[in-house]
Image 1: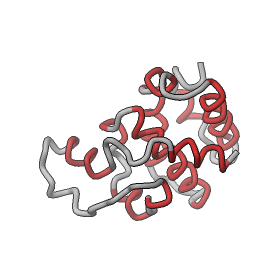
Image 2: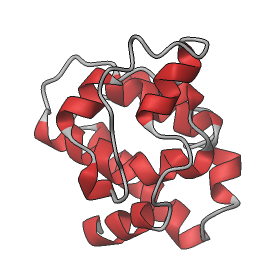
Image 3: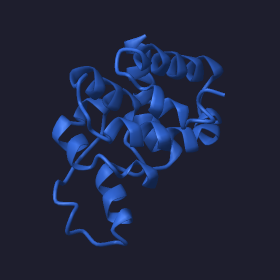
Length: 139
């Protein structure tokens, strides 16, 4: 399944709105807090440092960009299982808000794979509270 999800993320490369763009939008066009310049052509280009630095910008990304970042974010969580970071929570909440638009871009099989993967990591990472706020993804 991991290869399928990586392939899914690659289909939306490069992201229309990257993490730095999200920070700039969050800061009303100011670039002062968007110090890390990024060049995400493929999901493998996304680093932990970039995800940590731009961890709260997900609400400013569109559905295709959120799909691009799905594999890097879920891999980040697997490498940081005991984190108390808000990165994954904010990502999932933004994906949930954009889920109808995302589903219009992917097949039912892809949507099922995304939801199944999110459910599979729920128990391992104690994400009950995070997921309880998602009305679209787990409807």
